[in-house]
Image 1: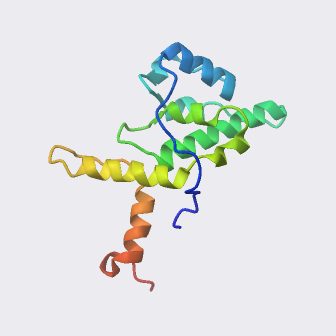
Image 2 (image 1 turned 135 degrees about the vertical axis):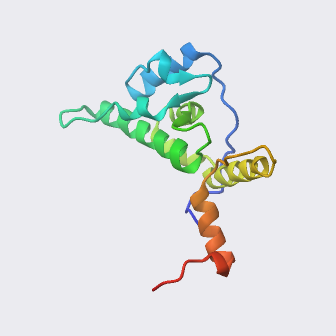
Length: 155
């Protein structure tokens, strides 16, 4: 288990929300901020839209939970499920994180990260592909543990 993510649980599937107005409402309800229309495109949002909103010393418990949800969303979109869009993350992950954050453990995150990486590696095998998405840390650690000639040596 390289990243320590659970592999037992419910599978993640595609989003149920379709319209931009619904995504904006979900951001407002779940994260406590309303994104600008310019920050959103189809099914993703700029990372800078999420980093603009900070927690303050006098924040309420609800605001802390909203900020925590936003940070987890950034971790999911920026580390575990990065794509090649350049600073944009999927809105879908916010839909998965709505409600009680403790329920996020019910999902099979490990198999989803691995499946997403495999999907991106398959797309990366096409001759016209110039960039590859997916959790490259997972791929790198796996390669170091299996292929001795790419493993860094300790000085």
